[in-house]
Image 1: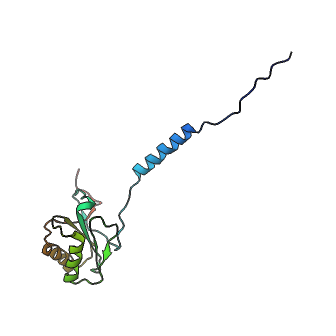
Image 2: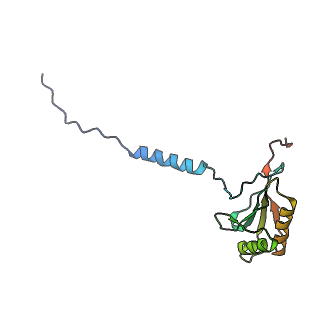
Length: 149
């Protein structure tokens, strides 16, 4: 008995579903990735047990102070902080004025290392106040020991 040969079609792998899965995975990883802010100065923040709400980067002037008392300032929209060559109050005030772009309603966040001299923090607060900034806050890191239930 002779059977007819069926004209068999070539086998193909349908890639449409595979491409859809890859795109979904790509979107998942993009959404779940955390981005960290890198600063020029190595700063170990002091710990605090209270939580604070994060400010948006468009309204924040960030003053970073290293443990040696070196200043670095990042204004709204700046991607990197600019390190100051001189730590004089006049130079600090000029840098804050430049970073604020003439707006005194911006929030100033002071990110000082836990071993920063008190004088350097007060100098940054005073320079900010002299430029008209009244909203000054300090950055801390979450305490490992929390008393909250």
